[in-house]
Image (tube, rainbow, N blue to C red; front, side, top):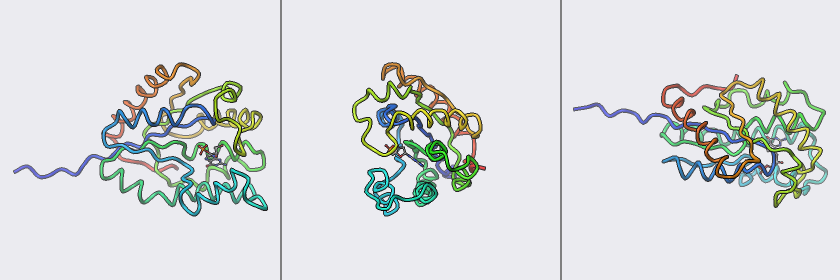
Length: 213
Ligand code: DGP
């Protein structure tokens, strides 16, 4: 009788980009195509830590949190979900993350007061994605999309800075990066995102999950 095999692990796929780049749409489309998959959105505003983050983003915290405090809360929000992420991956579920540590570094560095090394350090030890897809969109195009402008960071100048820092992040951070021009049609973006995802799914079938160093 054949010995039952443990399930192969799920893949960890990250979609990153500026605000209004189309991340949520692409995450849903991926989720529809990948059997046994789930979207995890960061920040997860439903937890107590996530509620503090939500208050900050909607300018409801008074006095406002310092740059250091909010930076560490964003990271803590990822760490608090880690046990459930690892359990899902080892049960064979593929996770599609809508933002991850790369937003964490880019938004905080873009504010100007915190160094790159400081910003990346709290996330060291979290799982390294099998593929990171960056939806690239000039901030002036993003600004024309519906819904732009409501929250703290959704200002054109800030988004320009974030886009610049993301370039450094893509050069410095390990992992398989794919940049997709998000100003193309939704269908074209979907196909490019899918091509990168297929590679990540293959990688995950053949390789152990690693940690961010
Ligand atoms: P979203 O819920 O995806 O609209 O993200 C909320 C805002 O917070 C958005 O402007 C991007 C920013 N953001 C997301 N993750 C982080 C993070 O880890 N650190 C910082 N400083 N900002 C983040």
